[in-house]
Length: 211
Image (spheres, rainbow, N blue to C red):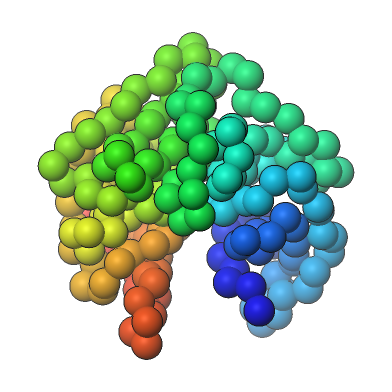
């Protein structure tokens, strides 16, 4: 059995990357939350995180690959994000995730081993490395209100909210060990956080008090 994570991409479409495998399953979600597989896209690389880059292209975080971020279309065409500068570093499993923030055209990449978050503009190719004492073992990341980024911090059991310029705006305890993944609501008012902890896995809903 594979460990799986789900990322909502549209109102009725989500994708499910199978961790430690090379497949992305596209699913629809019915009003009763029933999931149905629409299509499976095979990749030449192992994917760990995924977000929507445009209407039919995904931004995918890789592991054990010299390019930590790649693109793939719904039709399965793979490519590189040529208009953004990011570290040419090979990450191991579970050591990096990425997301795309459309409002600021920014790709965000977390680096678990380096306690850093990279914020790279796909418009200017500028890449900013963000470090802060409150960013400890960053894991999952998602876009927040106002072009901000919300990052799970594994060692401190918190999430931090970064401004578009890379400044820490807020740190909040999530009351669970080893937060792994985070997703924000469409209106920017709430976030959902899940963790990875043996025999104590949780999913929690939080209200964003700083936006």
